[in-house]
Length: 261
Image (cartoon, rainbow, N blue to C red; front, side, top):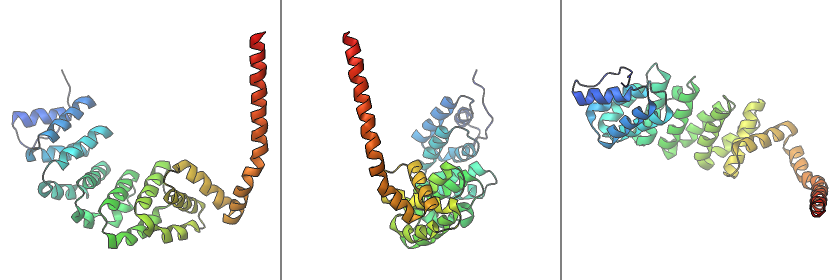
């Protein structure tokens, strides 16, 4: 018999109770299927059940399906309830509410994205706030958003920094003056992150780790010395490369000769 995690249903009908129990099942695949079923047959009666589950669901894929199910309901009923979750004491409730807002994409919700959310002490909440802010921000407020986001440069681990860089890159050319200024910051972590973001903006195909490594080199050596060192590298490495290729060719010839003996 499938064990379930108790979760409140919005009413006492057998169907609501069964769905609520399935959304709280220990098996994540059962929870995923339940969220899919609710989204496939949108019913306002499940709004509270979905919102409540978002705040406690441990599996990323199930959470994403819960958000999708919420997007299937009318924004007129979902948005006011999601707004309440933005003030929740539970970090996951805030983060998932923001994520759902990004999926709905209603620009009227831009006014709900506060500086406190963009600076949230919880990294996941802040990362999600950055993403949704980029989706919802009006064109004439992009510069103010950039000024707010660059204050977070150097924050957190690799994933946090990657999220911030992506947000800034997605905002486009409006970020350039702020990133140039941040690249001259005396804090190496801030300067490195800013320069890495500039590199990603110039060439989106650049990997984040490669951009960070190059940015560290520039911050350590200074722009002029780094450029000079970069220009000298091909001449310094050409000869060893040719020697290596010759050595490998000789080995291959020797091996082939031994094979015929």
